[in-house]
Image (cartoon, rainbow, N blue to C red; front, top):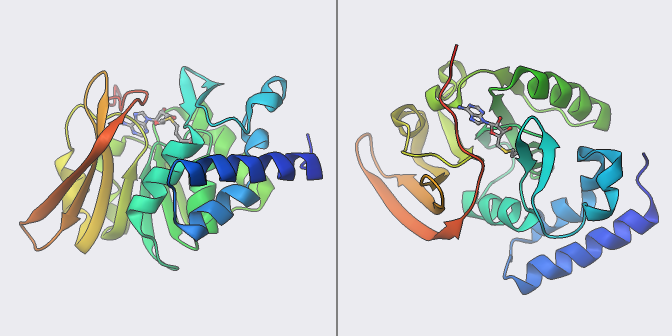
Length: 213
Ligand code: SAH
């Protein structure tokens, strides 16, 4: 599959939809206007790629809805060169958005096949995250901590402690918390021990699973 002017036109329309839904961060919108989302999905689903919908990507997983990707990315308030940890690499679409925002991206995926496929695919597309890791996101990624921001892209039944402790002071954790439905939650680290908590309404994610290994 290729990226064509027709695809670029559809991306522009998607960006308009996101603006109507009150996404304001121009760098996030520019990233979505640029990234060929259809290439992150199986070729048969190309027509669905620029609808504002989540979509199955195999192995019971989904590529997040563009609105959700934009909403989470906006909440992170990323500056260039920020060190960001993403939990749940999945298709790599959100990873690509973080790369476009100029972040140094670390990302963890617990499904081996998806991890391998996405690693290869991102490099083919020319994206260079700092580190893609196969493992359990509940533990974070201590070797490269602390992070300016941590983003969880699966529904977490509770907030994993290691993620809070791997944040810099003033660092931000964006995490959907809940079992069947998740409340989008932002934690800002104010000191070693204090965190400010903000909630932003309901979303639906595939579950953040505990490691079986
Ligand atoms: N950011 C992805 C979203 C994929 S869905 C995208 O843009 O496509 C969530 C992903 O989280 C799935 O790929 C799932 O396998 C992964 N996941 C679930 N539990 C996990 C865990 N404990 N550690 C790391 N990844 C996990």
